[in-house]
Length: 262
Image (tube, rainbow, N blue to C red):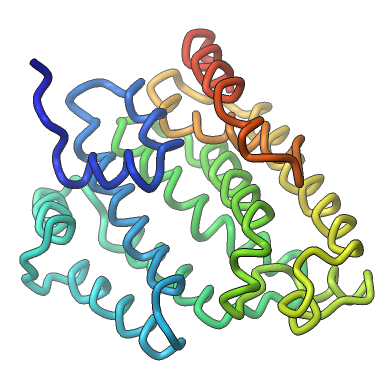
């Protein structure tokens, strides 16, 4: 009978199935640490989603910042996270960078595409690079690009979801070029002009995938890069039904894991 999943692993399977699947291709000894990292990422990512106002979201993120900085908290994710930090398995500066990226999403302000890119590299890009280091692989340039592309695909998939919660995680200069603003996106998150914005940003993210594929990726780093396979599918299928994503994308992940090529 298989052993039950740990709390971090169960949380990742439930809320972050893409990274859960990717982690199954990691060596058994590394999986639990990756699950703790990804569970932590989920906890800080949801702070802006569940808070009723920005100040509350920032308080939730400050709680996690204190955990990373050494405050003792008894919690199903914070406790194993603190243990891994104390053991030197997870690095405080990288974890704090992830929190800072989420703080930037509480009241997002990305004036340019360049600022939007910087944010994604600092958030989802850092997460992928940190996962690679947990796997003992030095592949930061490629993993940051793979991770940022995965983050971009998530932003583009979730424009209506974010808009309903009063947040727009899109660059203001590109919105303005299409006659849009954050306020207009929140009022009409399915506006036809947004299709052009999505296409332009998807093209930008596909460029990061192409750059990453041109760089060296040790096989040991592959599980950290595999979520980008889902990103490639999502960036091709902008606006299509999520049901079209499932099985085909999972087979693509399996093919990438077997071939060693994302």
